[in-house]
Amino acid sequence: MAVVTRVLLVEDEAQIRRFVRLALQGEGWLVLESDTLAGGILAAGTQMPDLIVLDLGLPDGDGIDLVREVRAWSDVPILILSARFQEAERIVALDAGADDFLSKPFGVGEMLARLRALLRRRHRTSDEASSLVSFGVNEVDLALRRVRHGGQEVHLTPKEYRLLCLLIRQPGKVLTQQHLLREVWGPTFEGSGHYLRIYIRRLRQKLEPDATQPQHFLTEIGVGYRFLP
Image (cartoon, rainbow, N blue to C red; front, side):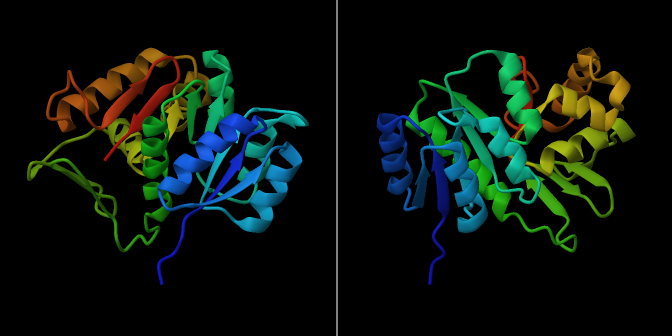
């Protein structure tokens, strides 16, 4: 018997909720709905969804509070849908634990593509016995700390390798500059975005088919980076 993907949709605008619900159901997914923050938190805890699609501007509170609440006990992928356009607000949501962010208005095709990417990450095995990650002509052996490109071994510096591992372990997820800098260089480097740009460029030069048109290490302007297998 096939397992049906369960998606929790937390959105207070009825028209948008209907639009998104129909798109999700078109993928064959079961849609659970809430139009309030309190209802969304309750549904997240009791219904155990596989994905959460969340509006930030809810009538009884800020959707970021739901992100923080859920992140205390679950790593379920969360996609934010919001009319907030400021980069600072997107960064706050992502740093709180959201996986991706779409500003309204948005295209249904892009929304579904991002959700499918998040779902693939959700379904990835956490078994370290399966430590090979492949993308394009690249293969990363996490157990042996070995990287190959087109069958040829690639040398990465310790920081390049650390950055690569952070990205490939969370495919489809937008990782903020602050998060990546903190994890690779330490908390005192969170404002040193030029370091990150240099190292992302190096990964592209070593692992992309064309470093000028990256397919795997994508820039989210003003926010951070996303890895796509």
